[in-house]
Image (cartoon, rainbow, N blue to C red; front, side):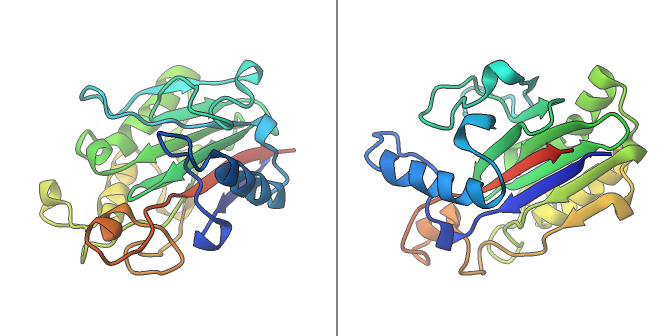
Length: 225
């Protein structure tokens, strides 16, 4: 079985998202490069999960391969998707985050890796279940074989999910993964509340005036022989 590298940046690693005007591009590329190199990853062997909020579908998934190495890592040029899947060792998947969860989902039997962006909109469309379903339908994955790593997430104190009786993102995502057939013992959770832990950027806290900088932290996942 492959080893899975799963690493999360902090504010100390710098902002991981290029602004629309690309004024901070040089600084962000340096931040990405330094952070990724600590994990044995380069910008050229990574592909960025790029989220857009056009339309009303927040469960769009696609497979990427060697032709996609570097996509979205140097600028904004990549095809949008809410999760990417790779079957290639040493192909890193990279996801900048604001107030959402990054979930690495690994088929330990077939060596297939998905990195899924699961936020409020996605959870309302049962995005954790949909991510697992994509793997079962397209690759024949067994949910009981799946190993999952989760980033931190906003807690319900500052970010309650109104569509789920004000529960937290983590409460809902765990429930959805269970309903998809994933075993609790196979879910590795980072319990950090990103709205209260000063090590992490939070867009909602920035809008509320409780955080000075509106940056993004990031998660990277990669299969390694």
